[in-house]
Length: 190
Length: 185
Image (cartoon, rainbow over all chains, first blue to last red; front, side, top):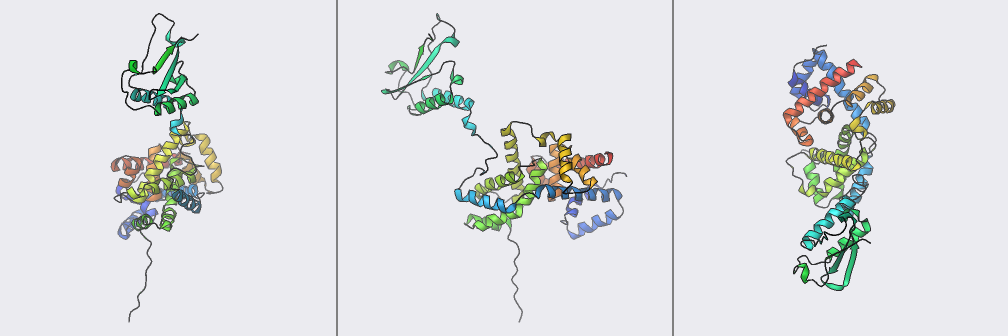
C-alpha cells in the first residue's frame, strides 16, 4: 500500500478520530477516506493508539487527585504531598553544604587568612583549625577542625560551621590582625 | 408567552480559574476532573508507568500554587502539560538512574505487551504498543499530543519546546515509522 501524499488532509486525521473537526472539514476527510486505503489504515492506527493511551491512564483515580490537591491547597503547600520529585532536599548534600560554607567564609569574613609555613610538612598533613568568634566575643569562640579542607567535614561539622558563620557580622571591621581572636589558626598535626 | 429555559453550559477554564481565585474550592476540583485524564495520558506517553497518578497529582498541586500567575494567552491544558513534563524531567534527574521510559527496550515492551493482554486483546494493538516504545522521545510526545489530545502543532510546540513546523515533521515521521514497523513485525 503506497503512502498517501495528502499531508494536509492527514494532519486532520487525529482530530477527525476525536470528532473534533468542523463539519465541513470532517466531510472532506470522510470523502477522502472513502477512496484512500492508506488513510483508512492510518485512521485505524490512530484510533488504536488513542485507545492504548486511555488504557494507560485508566488506572488514575481522579477523585483521589482532587482530594489530594484540595488538601495541599488547605496546607498552602506547593511541593508534592507524595514527595516524588525529590526525596532529599538538594541543599542537604555535602557538596552543596561545603560550597555554601565556602561562600559564607568568603563573603562574611572577607578573605580567609591562610598561613602557610613553608618549612614544615606538606599541606595535606597540616591540621587546620578555624577558630571563629562571634563578633569578637572571646566567650563565644567555637573551634571547628577543617583538616583536609571543607570537603572532609562531616555534615554535623559543616552545619556547626555554618551556624557559627551565620552569627558573624556581614562586614569585617578590620584586617585580621586587629581582631582579638584569629579567624583561622593553623596548627600542625602532631 | 414564551418559556425561558436555563441552559447550563459547562464553565470555561477561565471562569473556573476566576472562581477558584475567588475562594471557590469546588472550582479547583472541576478543573482537576476536566484535565486530569489528559494529563495522565500525556504522563504515560512520556514513558511514566507506575508513577502516573503521582505525577498528575504533582502537576496540579504545582499548577494551583502558581495559578494566579497563569497567563490565559495559552490553553490551561497546554500549560498543565508543560508543568507535567518539567516535573517528569526533574524527577528523572533527581533519581539519577536510567528508567524504563528512557530505555524502553525490548524487556519493557514485552512487559507492556503482557500487561496489555487484559486491557486490549488485539495483536495489532500490542504491536503498536511495542513500536511506540521505539520512537524517539520527541516523536512519542508529539504523536501523543496530536493523536490523544488533538492539539494544534503550535500548542504542541509550546509543550515540547520546539517549533510548529518541526512538530509537524516529527508527527509524520512518527506515523510513518509506526506504520512501517507494525507491518514489519
